[in-house]
View: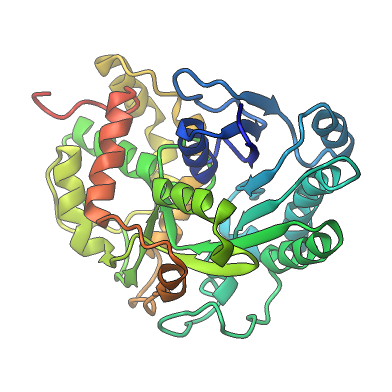
Length: 367
């Protein structure tokens, strides 16, 4: 019989799905997956999925009251507005994200509950990267950046609730996260895959669509899932905030040939192109690709989510000069005992292979 029961909020998202896959394989863990959409459940999954809208307080109270005692929470749920980037500065977006967290956690901390640990995602917007250049490297012990952000609203709530209810917590700040989830707010793997397939179908080279490149770091969702499992029980993780990345750096323009090779397409000259405009106009081309290869991929709108807007932000599609580098220190996490890593080029190849195996992207030429 499992000794721990983890509730994974946002289980259909990039991080939540990776966490679902990871915790489902671990002994001594029961898993409750929570999301509005039904996630792709692991083969032989013995846990349960709870279809729940976290903006509905009454529905949360009713649904969570029927669960067995939850010992751990991995909170990866997220509300984003259409168009994505502009909403990052809007108060109603921030308040909605705070309300979602409150609706989930507060019913789990009353009498008769046994909540022991909560992990929550933040990100490099905590350092203000969407507003201004930040220190290199950005470190967790820097004073809180003075800008409105739902991370701070959630963090203050968690700290106060933990003090009253007696659970511990860990905050993670990943860089760009990559995984296999479709139709989400921020995942570039399906964007890159669809862009390559559309280019190939039209006889176009796979051109880098962005502006001048800066130096970045990536975080594989599987790596973050392993960190969530570590933090759930590691004494050194309790009450801490950790940056987390793959462990190397990359530049979009420099990694582009490796992406083209992994996707089986030819690289062309740079061609500035906004994904938020270009990809929606290619719905018919994508449908033809799906039919030709017998894919089980959804229509383009359902596949993209808001991630094509995220692509334009990450690629700097409108930038005239290279943005400042965004590098975070991961020394604190490694010294605390989590030192896992993955080569970022290998990560891209892995995720494209996974989407091909799931028949969500076309096979490689000759494959």
